[in-house]
Length: 91
Image (cartoon, rainbow, N blue to C red):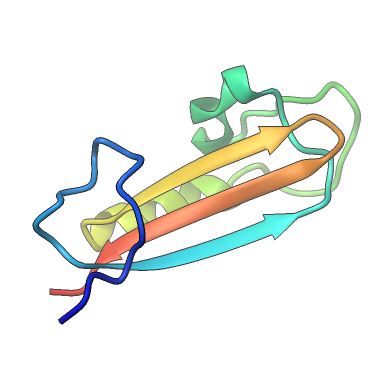
């Protein structure tokens, strides 16, 4: 069986496992790359402007992914959007 991901850019991923890779992106407000890990913290706002939302969505997604022994990674650029990569082992 062929690996389900094309690269192993993240050291957390085990090269001997196969993963389902899910990527989603938006063209929203984005975030400064230096805050990559902070976007997953509960009720952590990275912007001083008011935006709708409770601030717990990404924290919940991260917990779900981790409960399935997976990983989630975020990349973003201010005012250009964000991309999230989820890797969940398939076996």
